[in-house]
Amino acid sequence: MNCFRTLVIVNSNINLYSLSQKLLAWGVHVLTSTGLVTAFMAIISIEKEDWRACFLWLFLCFLIDGIDGTLARKFKVDKVLPNMDGKLIDFVVDFVAYLIVPTFFFYKAGMAPPNLMIPSLIVILISSALYYGKKNMVEDDLFFVGFPVLWNVVVFFLFFIFQNNLMLNFGSVVFFGIMHFIPVRFAYVTRTKKYFKMHILFSAIGLIGAIIVLYLFPQRSFPAEIATLVAVSYFSLFAIYDTVREPQV
Image 1: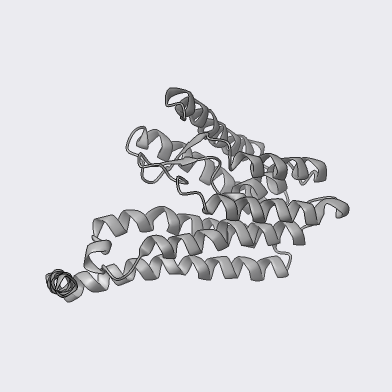
Image 2: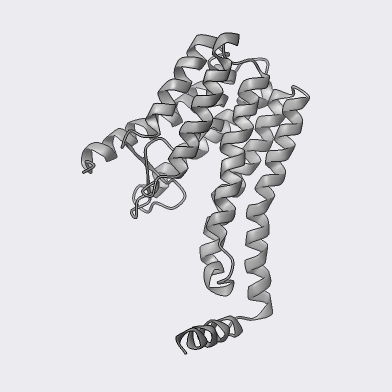
């Protein structure tokens, strides 16, 4: 009887929404899913050793990831399509775009000494998989606990900004692999309300700087590189501030 009542309530809620609302909700899920298309195009670019094109595709994926959640809340996607889970779609896209693709880039671009390449890949993949398994990966107040799986950002800085120093790359892999499990609180930029405007401002500064770096590659633009470093420094310092302000138990 309880199951029957639940089914009736769910069906009643579904019928409350118009066809246009349902189409908009499906559109948001499709938009999220296109992140996999951009990620696959990035893989094709890696095969062609077109390093710049790879990260342009990844930045497009990053932009999609930045707006789909806002659209999902605006169009009440979870209520209009209760049988669909946009968060799971998002996790799939993130896992591919922010882990698998940059790991493949790291490998194909020869970003570690030959004898340390396989250990580097193992650290990246296993630490990230374990991080996704943490139940408190994202706190209720919209902070990532530990360094989030953003290997696209790490690889971008190591390759394009720091010019692919092999030992620095290996040390960075070990460092960020460990940082997945250090309870430092990193802001979930697109969802946090406090300091939202500042977060968006520095995100824009970093993104614009990164696009200029890619556009000019292999030539260098120190102003653009400094802009990206300022942005990442801001979020790193803010993570420390938030962790000290709200210490983990």
